[in-house]
Length: 142
Length: 177
Image 1 (cartoon, each protein chain N blue to C red):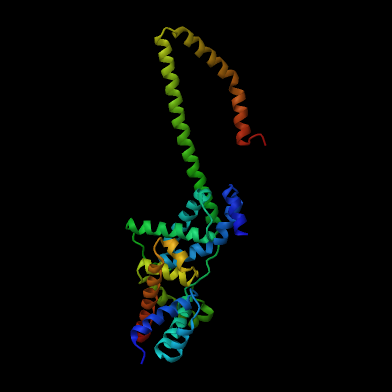
Image 2 (image 1 turned 180 degrees about the vertical axis):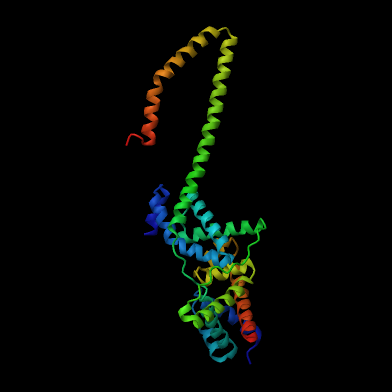
């Protein structure tokens, strides 16, 4: 009579064999041929497989969901880029403002005013160029 | 073929990454439906998994199949969801619809599927993950251990106890019928 403890060990081996983790060795094969309990266990594993396989329904590919995932990632990246641009803008403008105040404090106030006037005139001249570049970037010229 | 697509995707080729996601979509979604037993939750995690994969594709080191990476991400997201105590309820949406032309057979199939679904969902999360990964996707103990981040011995014992539980419950159900 084969002991239960031994069967437990063989059943573990049989499960490994069933799930292709190992090949059935001679020892297990020999035990199987003489043990009804293990033979039944082997059959039950096959029955269970058939039952479990009924749950394996093939899911169709949802192309739209994949496209939506890409879109969502683009949005996240866009938001991150905007935040970075905003931080950069705050830092640069604070530095420029600080520089302006520093220079004004040292007595260069008139020169700064002239510089600002020149920049204002230049920006109005460069406005058409900026608009053109923007429309090129956004593809309105096509 | 998959290796070439991965190389291209890592270099920023969107089409290649799209193809990779398309070819692994069914595995990912199927895994999550079996795991969560809830189509809406499975949909959410599938979407989040794909987004994570798109964001982190450059960091991906192809040591195994691409699907293994996706399943690892999905498993971690599901675990996070459970940790945040988001209750996942059974909705039974993934049961095939009853065919009116073959009503009797369809009802039998539906009942069988219902029975197996409730048995599978009665397992603990860890055991269910191991059983699903081994039974439906044929991953090796080593691959499952990598996905679940646990020792191979734990995978083996969880599979053993998981299968035992399924068999016992199947017997109980059959005895009651």
